[in-house]
Image (cartoon, rainbow, N blue to C red):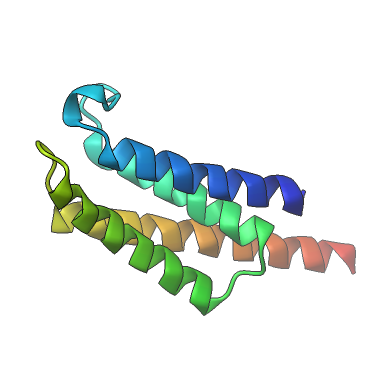
Length: 113
């Protein structure tokens, strides 16, 4: 399971980069649920990293930095812009995903006893 989670984690990172840096006309949207879109993909990435690797503070810090870099990188794409609100949602969602993975791992460990 860890291997599949690791592959998923890195595929989600690639998807986030692509979806964040394509011109606005090429970016798929899901009915105006902008904040939910951000939350879902970053929470999934956090969860995948948490299941694929041992959840650590450094992983959380790395995902928060990644969220910030992605927002800033959007300034380089015509028609895109960085939003503090997107960064906050992205960073929080990634940390929530990591926390959910840590809880799941802890419960699995206890169930094995």
